[in-house]
Every structure is written in C-alpha cells, then in structure tokens.
Length: 631
Picture 1 (cartoon, one colour):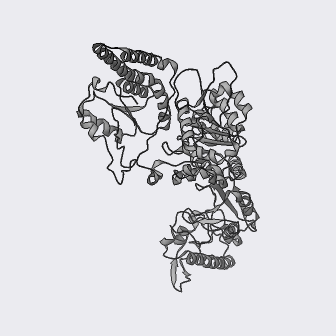
Picture 2 (picture 1 turned 30 degrees about the horizontal axis):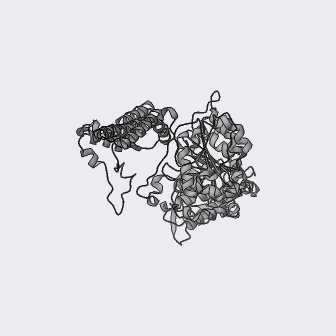
Picture 3 (picture 1 turned 135 degrees about the vertical axis):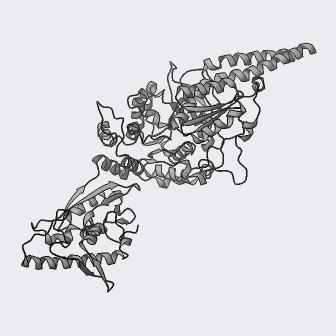
C-alpha cells in the first residue's frame, strides 16, 4: 500500500484508500479534529466535571466521548463535510497507536512528557530500520539524519549502519517527548562495527587476469566484489554448481601481493583444487603443492606432492599449497609458523562441530590470516550453532562467546548444548550485512550456461590401486612377448590374453575407485540438493546405492536389471518427491534427467536430451558392460 509521502511513522494495518483521501488530507483532518476536540474539552470542563475516558495508549483520548459529545462533522480541506463519528475516528487512529502523544501533550494532566517506543532492527537490506508510533516531532528529527529514507511499503525509517550511533541518540534529544529506544543487541552492534572497519578492497578487482575475468558470470563478479568490499574476509555461500571455486581463485588473484596461498579442502577435492588453480591462473604446475596423507597412491597432472606422514622435514613452499582438513591437526604448528596471509577454506561446513579436532586445529590458522575466504553451499542457517565456528573464523573478536551467540540464535541452551534456532530472520540479515553472500540457482538461472563439464581428479590410495598396478605390469610383459614372438598362433593367443587383461583393468579400476568416489559423494550429500550419478560398472552402481542408503539418503537406482515397467515410476518419484535426493543410473553417458520445470532451463538452440531414450532401452547384460571405461 502507499505510504505517507516524505514523513510519517507506522499507522498500523489501516490503508489510506479506506477513506478515499490523500495522506495530506487525512493529516489535515486529524489536526482539525484534535483542535476541535481540544476546544470542546475546554468548554466541557467549564460546564461539567465529568472526566474524559482514557485512551488505550494511557493518555487522554482526543476523540469525543459518547457521554458528552455526539457525532460531529469534521471540516474537510476539500471544502465539503465528511461525517466523522467517534467510531470511525477511533477505527482510523485510536486503536493502533496512530496518534502521536506529542500532539496530545496538552491533554496530559500530569504535565509529564508523553512516552514513545522506538524499535531498531536490522533490515534484510543490511540497513538499520526504525519503527515507532507516528510522531511528527520524531519524523522531523529522523529526517535530518544523513542518508535517512522512508520505506513506504514496510512503513519504517531506514538508515545506513554507519549512522547507528546517531539513530540511537537523536530520539532522546527531541524536546517534549520521552523516548524509549530499543537498541540492537550488543553482538549485532559489534558485528556491524567490525564490518564497517573492514578496508574496502574493491579497487583491486582489476587485477584479475583478463582471460579469467572474461569467463566470469555477472553474479560471480558480484561475489568477488563482495569479498573485496569486506576486506577479503567473507563467506561465499552460493548453492552448489555456481562456481564458488572460481570466485575464490579470482579473489586470490586480486591479492597477489599477499601470496603464497593456503587452500584447505575435503580430501576428495585436493587434486580438483590444484587442477582448477593451474587452469584458471596459468601458473606453472611446479608452483602448486598438494599435501597427501601417505606415500604411494595415484595423482595426476604433475603437481608437486608432499606427504604429511613423512619422517623428514616437512616443507610447504608452493605458491599455492593445497591440504585437507584431516591433515591440519598433524601440521598445525607448521602452518602457524609459515604465517599464510591468504587462506581459502572450501566446504567450510566441515568445521561445523566446534569440538572436532579439525575445527580446533583449523580455527587459529584462519583467524591469524589477513584474508580468509570460506566456501560453503550449506550455510546451516536453520542450525545456527553449526555456523558459529565459521563466522568465528572470520571475526574472532566479535564472536567470542558461544553462549552469547547461542542464547540469541539457538533458543538458549541446556548444559551447554545449543541445538535450537531462534531470531532466524535477524541472523540471516546479520550474515548478509557483514560476512555472507548467497545466491541460489533459481535466482541466477538466466546467467547460467545450459551445461558445463568438469573433471574432478580423485586421489587413490596405494592399497586401492595395488591390484590394478599388478595388471599393468602383466600387460607390459605380454606386450613384450607379442613383439618378440614369431609364431602367428602364439601371437593370436597372446593378443587374446592381452585383451582379457585390458578388460579386467577396466573393471578392476572401477572397484579401485569406489572408496574415492564415495568420499567425494560426501560433499554432495552435505549440500542436501538433488543429484544424478551415472556409472559404467555394476560394482560401482551397487556400492554407491549401498553408501547412500547407509547415509540415509533416499535414492532411486536404474540399471540393466530394472524392468521397463518400473523405470518411469522411479523417475517420476525422483522428479516429484523432494525426499528422494539421488538418482543412480548405469550407462547414462551423454544423457541427462529433466529434474523439474522449475530447476532446468532448456537450451534455446538445441533440444535438451532427457532420460526417455534410456528408459526405452532394453535391459543390458552384464557382459555388454565389460570393457567400457569407468567414470
């Protein structure tokens, strides 16, 4: 509804259109009514000692009493008469604290100043909002505050956080009024003050390499600028798939003077980070050091590797150093001595448990760094206690007490446990105003490409690849025998054996990858979103399904054994049931699943493929799957 233009506090739930008059005309009618009622009161006091009934506000009502004053006509600024009864005027003004006590001060028989409550709160825009019963004196005072604005839709006055001290003081200095100001909680005030003290680094945005900046989407540019604006300490909480990794790398490129960089990630994403850094920044692979927990295993792309369990000296001398959360407790003293100025913590919700070893070890490293970028697609606003350690990493001087935070946002606590949620809206507004930027896919859908492909390299342990290595050795032996053999019959026999070993390598490599794949799936499960998994081998499919069910993640599975008659039912269940989070499918290469109309956007130039073709395929035999490379 339309607000009062240029001045006026809250009028409650009544609409100016109910009277068919403009706001200015209603104000004039109010002033005329007050004047006439004051005159009648003076006249009535001389003729009778009958008291005037008290108003609901506790002050003398300016409205006529049914016992002393009949229905009257109020002169309209339009030149006509509008009948105004006590009931109609009270319906408009008296029942919702609409009249300012300051206008009614002459009726205060005690001679004391009228009292008004001003409630300050943090608005969703990050501004300070003030709500109070209408008072022209207060309106005039607030209007003089720099950058003050009137939000007509929500009927509140708005101020930048930098004006908080002025907003708290101004109401108390209004003559003729007694004002009670309900301030923001001290924790909120400290957080806003800390954010205001942060140095604005948006001027460094132009340091992003041109080849990287040109690939950024508009919302990603906004995310990078948000982190820089907040002094290089912020939480990017975009939904999964919106390029948080790229945004963090771009922020690091703006802060090149503070290199080297430490990246902390889940163990399954270490090589992914190394690959992304090298790809986007075009730095030599030897400048990227990846810390693994043990010797052996498998790694790709030629990155330098250090092992956290080595008995010799341990050196983190890369320009970018990638480690996992599990390694941090083992090398915390080394990390603190190296004094990294830039730290990126991917999947920062891994630190949600404040008592966990990795959290206790990681916090000092993050708090000591000058610049910290946290990445999490699940900021856990519905479970505020899980957010505490993350924001404590960004602002340790603000979030010093878990009990203070828990009492405000976690419904208090019993025996030190804070598992509830309270003041959810304020917490969300506080996070957005000070440390967090979050976008959902549905909000930026028009900026997203139809489909993106990404390779994620997984680290395999030595025990998982031992059998595969033995097969490769056997393969090389057969290759030498084939090259040295003169008999066609022998060559054919060796080639047959060679092909069998190749096929076995494919199937055994799928089994070897299972532990790493299941570890990687943990990040998907944490996100809580729907996801699809396609694989080529039955052991992989079965292991994934078993893992999801063990983690209590509802899923569907479609493989060669699934009857055609039930496939569509399963797909429909995945599409329409929000509780079904995963679809696990065999041999789904080059196909996709239309999750729902609201989540998918078809390509304007190419018809999007769905699972229709896959659903209509005949059941595949086990032998038909052998020999295909696993994913």
